[in-house]
Length: 100
Length: 220
Image 1: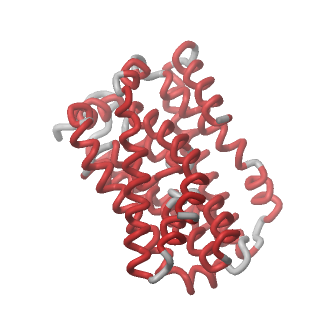
Image 2 (image 1 turned 135 degrees about the vertical axis):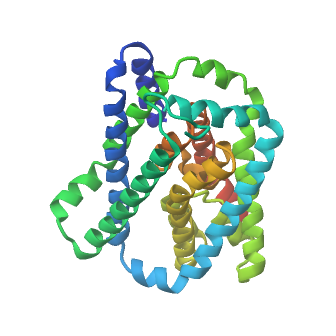
């Protein structure tokens, strides 16, 4: 919930006060934060006891438990959004990249 | 020039591909570098500081993403138009994941209740790992941890492909509960502001559902 609150403050600032000329700087700072977060995730994993052993022995089963549920979710969401949100989906691809 | 075209301030397809490649390389390098630092204790004071302040980095990121969303005028109006259809994506993710858990139970021989509980982690590896470990032992806990971690990591790298070949909404599906934080920057980079907002809403709903689903599935 804190995250949502912080984001809402950002939305308000972006909507009312944030100067257009800093848009690119904002995007670059987002990349820096993302990279730092992934790095932290790696550090946490690497410092986990027996991480490599776990990965070796349970890797294949874990991979199945990732692949099948994620794959089913993807197929289902794709089908549902195509059926119920089609017009927007099609518009999105054309309009959004133009804003980047 | 391609259909996506080139105008001042817009990406051509080649630029877009270059950006994607650069981001994926950066992400892989950061992950591998982090794992190596964690394994070897290299630069532990710096890495300790970063890990200790991870929440602050996440808050900063969310603030910056919020600014970008706020700069996109008329977005809230668009989101309001969805009404109840806003629940389609989290519903698809939950049903798809549990169905996937059932298939995994058949393939691996792990009991159905444990298998669906593992799949109910929806990418929230820390919570799923700890909860399943308490409920079903260390081995199942490790599978829950690793599989949900893979879901987070791989969805990170799948988002660009899904955005290009399927539709933007589908990018949220593999991300599951992580669509409100870790995978959000990729959503922002490869989809549009509307999908980013849907992604946050989906992440909040899925995160709230994970503990309930794990418990329900395990006790079913």
